[in-house]
Image (cartoon, rainbow over all chains, first blue to last red; front, top):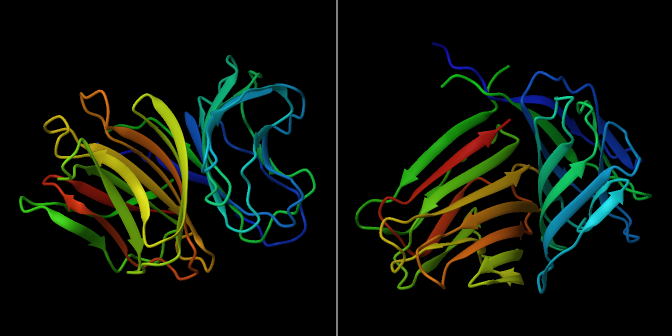
Length: 167
Length: 168
């Protein structure tokens, strides 16, 4: 039996450098079982801003998350509840930060959506995070944004679809 | 749709052990690299460190980590280092046949930017202390495309394997 591809690139976006605070990858097909979003993010003009994520363009208070954080001197964890986004406070204006996020069973319309995320800011912090989006809607778009800072050229986001396949 | 994860090469350490192994002439046609290791060192402890360098360079490495082990969580930072750590895995005094694991993700390895590396690693053994899991945020402050990767330890034990994947 022919093997079925299980790890497929759905979309890839590399920012050209035009001034924007938000990148949205939309029209995500509902045909996979899980998503892996691989991003490598840089922003300009540090003013205390930080990287955040939203699902389906939803800015209501439906997000919560718990990170484990290593600052380079302290290991810590905290909670964010009834938030309007999932934020990573370790963004960087000097070097690209890899952020890898797993969205499990993203297309179902029965359960809320849980994510697992790893972010690696060598100049800021290293984090592992669990996040919850309290919506049963299928995930059809994912946005990366900053409050005011511009996303720098070369920032890249790729969405891979994972599908159970025959061995 | 086509599979987007391609194996470039696998290296297995033989019975003599090895102080280092290298992936050289890495193809430049992928967007990202992923390295997966199953690793045991001969360090005279329950654990042993594994280091990574790129392109034979011994400068420009920095890191932050988040570590769990010995009943506590800690975080450390290094700058101006000659290598980056990619794991504290099983050592010679670990449970027999226990191997640590590590996974490193290197996005945009051919870009002209500095290279960020995300690493998760763990060792496990049936001991109360001296075994660790780590998350690393590593950086090589060099704009050259990555063409080779070297992994080293005071000695890598037999059956240690590293596999390098290219991702499109």
